[in-house]
Length: 347
Image 1: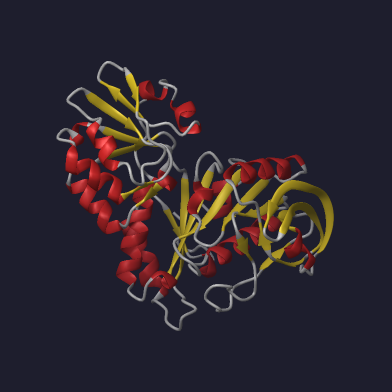
Image 2: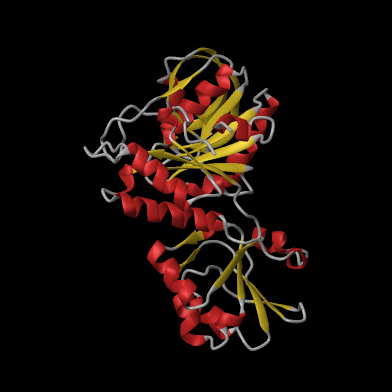
């Protein structure tokens, strides 16, 4: 099955996120633009940051530009659209503002190159994606720019494509291990159905921290973030504790502090909204698993495929077939695709 077949007539909003800068995300995006054009599908494109510029503003290396086809709907900051050589029809000037001006929704009237700098908050991203659908986009592609994986959050996109590549590390084995780790995070188990009925959606929306005991009774923990509150969370855990609802982002230090004060920390299931809220390294993740930390998500990321880029802008590359086939073996349940080689390894 081809990458487009995994998406078309199945999802309305998808995201493309990268393991690192220059991992091949823009190559994947351009591939999708071309293939959807071939089947006559109208797509929408926006970004969770800035992308499509010819020169990477951070690394100063050349980047693939974004070429958009006629009838494509795009949403980007006003200043970037003025630099576009595609002919555009303005559909709406939104209330979403960025450092590069208001986000404008436009229809491409003549194909050309564009730079995309989309809305900066999750709520704005979702709202603008829905507006693009109203203007006729059959599928909206969210470009997770500047290594922002938040676009993969299930509250924003229905499915995700993960781009990985040589730019992440000179060591191919390291790139493979980091990619497998990211896929593992995206594949975290969802909480049991009964727990989801405890009003967790509202808890996360209100950024609350709750501990739930074996009888289903909940107790509010008076903190505003997990980042410096691990000991407070740990001190709330006792022999009757069953679930800990952790809103917002969580880091390794939080669990390190919980473990240092909570005798029963292994008996608790820690619930986060989705895997984009977890900020730990692969090494830290292995330590947490070894210590018996169990993390579940309210919403699981729907990972459709991993795309691979064996080339690095830093002057080195991997053996393309070796990179592809090794990742296929490590990720047997996920489509692993080299779009530059024509998807010859589609699962």
